[in-house]
Image (cartoon, rainbow, N blue to C red; front, side, top):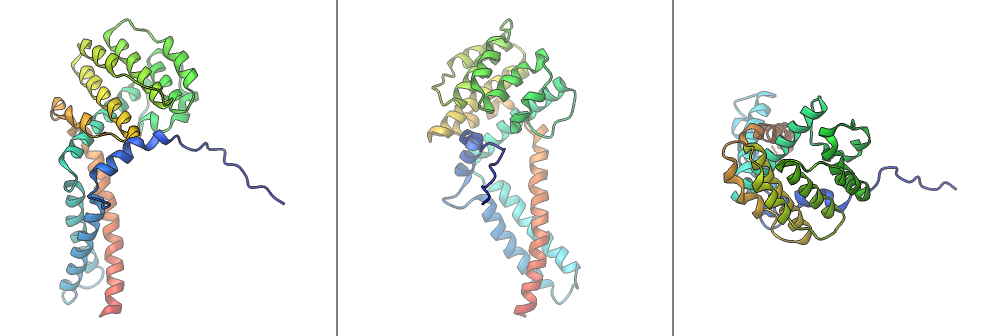
Length: 271
């Protein structure tokens, strides 16, 4: 008799999706998410377009027109039905994630398609350079190796205001992953000493993100802290917003094509 094979991939830590789950709860209208509202409206628009053009356009032109109507209705609703404070919080996280991704790209000398913390298992493949040591601490904690993370944290320098802030931020990060009490006070005080404008803004966003993570795992308001720092960033989030909007548009376009074909098949039976 064969025993079931154990998975070699450890189950993800509950904290791994805590913040994204908090965003989903905050943007939902009761049990309904904005994407569902957009989908329903897009299907209605696509079906109406297919019916109106049935006597004028032949396949596949009618399907293309139906898909276009689906996209034209669903995409704006998906992006605009979100509550304003959720959009503001999204802007802050979009900018912070983009800023951090560029930072680690420069340190690693290669293009990254996502933040390294999305794949914490890469920690053992990181070069042991001074610039990447904070990232190593971050990934060790996300991997559940909090004792190693603390050992590495103790070896980080604290000579500059930014280094002192980063140590405080990483200490809070480790405590969060370890389900230990945290205090963002050290982060806030260190952030105010950072003179470089972009780094100071990043520090403020990181403090807000730390507060949001704590709220996400305790049932509090995870959106408020991030939304509160949105105005400090000005138009900076636009630099990284294209990727998010393009992803939404691509997804909606593919859904529109599938929906138009399904509507055509269904209409053939109905008519």
